[in-house]
Image 1: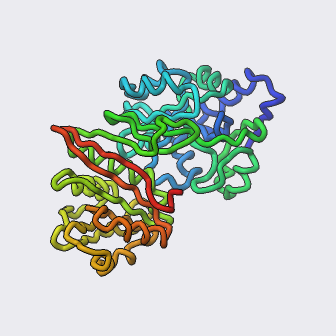
Image 2: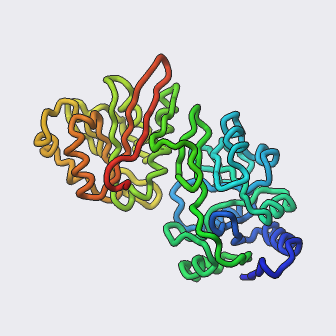
Length: 366
């Protein structure tokens, strides 16, 4: 492991040495305007495999690539009009724009949805490095998954195993960084953008997101992306997905998207007459249960209580509730008691367009 002191080393020397490490398949720790990142040549399969082993636990989350400009990005990503507008407004800066992958980067960089994060950091040394190197570098945070946010090299090294440290070839040490939030992650692949992670930059002043889909597959994709966004909550406390909307609006279609994301092979049907259906799942290293409840016919909180919903709130469990408003107060209190977050989705439809109004509610989100 080599360490370069960025404050006392000419930029051209840093860029030359770092380019040599990247070209040889090495892993580099580098500073950005948010946190320290971990970078390898995104087109090198062996280097990407090393990075994924270093991060240790991604569970399907995509990596991002650092590029110098949109012209470079278009070699690797499909930049639609929406992504172009967001990029023009926020980049360079602490925003990651999720686009469709063109299949040029190495396997393991793109997500299971075929998407890839576009990052143009507002950090001149890294922009100059990527320009000089001529190929994209991965831009994921340098901490091991689930560990302290990396604002200094000591933040990183003190939370790594020896095996992880051995995978680092070069550290660009710029001292302790300003404690900025991580980048905001915006998925631009749908007709309306969806924020997958909120950082310092807010796309909208509202806490509610509105997403429009035109096919069942698009609705299912949104469902999967929302579960991926909330995956830490799923594994740590469990998660409630609260669905409201008129009959036939697509609540069960949404649930099918969740089941597909969880690799559940069983057929998903509406539990209108059974009230609750249960499905086991295994996704990467996580084994849990998906509960699908329909409480439309319930007339009181006591009836909801008899369904045993409280016993379904546990780590690695997802409870999807159709007609959430029927027992909203009871369910809100239940979630608060167990500190389980609720993602509320109100569905509406006009013609072929289905609109999902998505908001985080409940004490666990406060």
